Length: 141
Image (cartoon, rainbow, N blue to C red; front, side):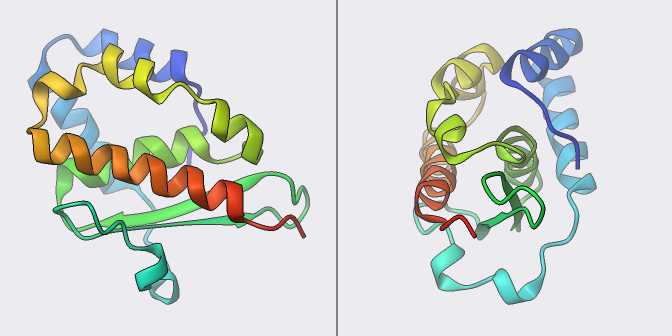
């Protein structure tokens, strides 16, 4: 899984131009997302506010326990792509770095709000909130 910063993600999307290309890129990110271990597909890791079935989980790195790594899954292609994008953005960072991420800026630059339905937009923010809450509550080993 790649690790990206907000500026890198925005730059990648800017290269794509129209929403159809961006949509396809998100779908491809979702297809490339490593399979989530079924043991983590629990009620605690489910994003209940999402219309799609979404699970995300944060785990500490064995070598650098202050750094978190995420895995996730979704049953719809476009949202799975958003999950993959967020996993790439959040993974490898500390809880404080994750808390400081300006996701509003990212989504504004990617124009997600204007291209996703209002219900999906609410769900995407629910995924972000779940991931940030997991970061804040994951004990450092």
